[in-house]
Image (cartoon, rainbow, N blue to C red; front, side, top):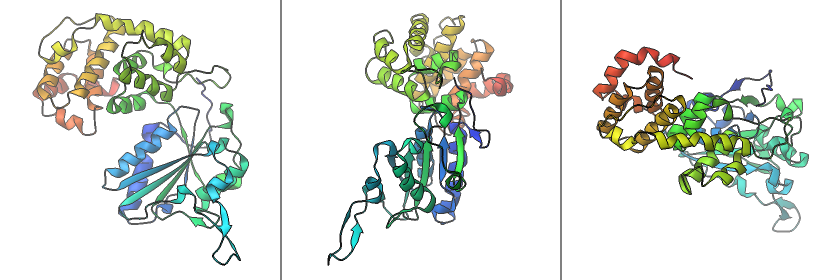
Length: 371
C-alpha cells in the first residue's frame, strides 16, 4: 500500500470527510444560503479509495433533512470541451451564435432539491476539458451557462504521486478550492460496509487481515489489486451471483488479484466450522469456536444475520447471551459491529436487557476494541 501523503492538505477517512462536509452543507441549507457559500471541494486520493462513495454518502446525509438530493456524476476523462460548454448554433435572426445548454446543466432549481455536480477524474481529463471543468468548479459557470444556487460542486482526482493519469493543478486554481485527501481507515470502511450490506465473508476476511483493504502501490504494475472499490465489487458478486468463494474464485481474482484472492479463498474455508447462526439467534448455545480466524468469521456472520433481522430484538438478545461466551475482545467487537447496523441502532439495543447487562460488564472495553 502506498503511504504517500500530500502533507500540505488535511487527510481524512471517507467517514470523517462525509461527516464534516455534510455538516457544512446542512448548516448552509438550514440558513437558506446559496450553496456557493461553501467553496467547491477537491477530493484527492489513490484509485478505489472511496471518493465517489463519499459523494453518495453526503447525498444521503442531506436527504435526512428532507431535501431531495440529485447527484450528476460527470466522468471528465470521457468528456470533450463541447460536452461541457454546449454546441454552438445561430440565434433566431442568424446574427449571433448561441450555445445549447449541456445536459449536465439541466437541474431542478426548486428549493426542495439540492443538486450535487460531481466532477470525477478531473486531474486525468485532457487539459482543454480541465479548463472548462475548473471554470465550473471555481466560478460555477462555463460559457453562457450558470449553475443554479442549489448546486454543490465537488471534484475528485488522483494524485500525481499515484502514477495514474494525472496532471498537476495550476496553483492559481488550486488556491480557490477546498482540498481534502481521502485516506484509508478500516474502522470507517467497516462501519459503512456493515450498514450498506457488504457480504459478511468480505467483512470477516478484512477484519482478520485489515492490510488487504487497500493494496494499491504506484510502483507496482499489477492490473488487478484490492481497494475498497474492488472489494465492494467482490461483495456484489457474492451477494448477487453465488456466495461460494470457491465457485467465484476466478471472478474474484480478476478484481483483487490472484495473490489476495488465494488468501481470501483459503480463509473462507473456516465457514465450514461455524456453528449454526440461526440456532444462536433462536436461543441455542452451540459450542464457541476458539480458532482466531473462525472467530472473525463468526462475528461477521452474526452481524450480517442481525443486520438482516434487525427488528427481531428477541433473536438479537439471544445472540448477546451467546456472545458472553466469546473471548472478551471478540464479544466487544461483535456488539460494536451491531451498533453499526444503522444509524440509531444503539438506541434500539438499549431496549434489550441483555445488552444493558453486557454494557455493565464489558462496556468499558469498547474504546479499546479496535483490532
